Length: 227
Ligand code: CA
Image 1 (cartoon, rainbow, N blue to C red):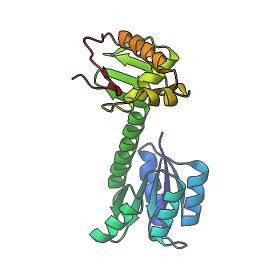
Image 2 (image 1 turned 30 degrees about the vertical axis):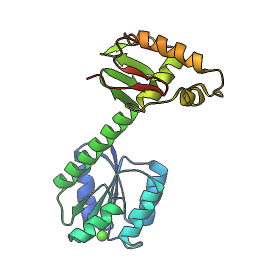
Image 3 (image 1 turned 180 degrees about the vertical axis):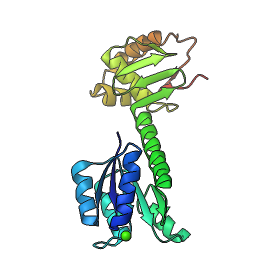
Image 4 (image 1 turned 90 degrees about the horizontal axis):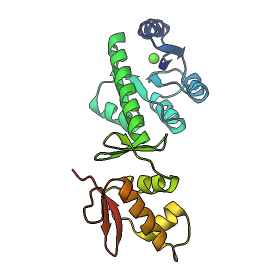
């Protein structure tokens, strides 16, 4: 269940929002000052923060900047000022989204869901690399081609992941030796060629009919989307 930190000094608003958010299935903690909010972010790392900008102890924009400096938690700011310049300033200072006061619990819930969805999507993308039919699950170190798992050695996987992270760019053999094998280049050229040919076979392609893996003669090698 997502945890929400609500930073709001008005106790009536705070009580109403805690009720609305809890009813929607969120675990809510609520504080009334910026200093308490900063401490909660540091100690409990909530999934999302709703930050009122009119707080008694710190200027709202300063509180936002301090929170952003400490953590990459999604922050939705609640502001009483509706001007476009103000909103732009807040987004530039690190807010992920905003609500203007007064706002309903339903609007806030929708904004929270949207922010959490974006965050989950970004996390999924960071955990995987895709090049056409090839997919690498970076956390599990598993590569699949057209949905079938490839049986790769550790080095073959590292080589493929290195190239997949640089798709459509020619990578030199020297770079592969230094960055994937972590060895000095001299004499290791053949090792690379051998591993590339093994990898190519496991990808189900040949030098005469390359699909994903392209050798650029005299320059290096490149992974491309064949579609
Ligand atoms: Ca306030």
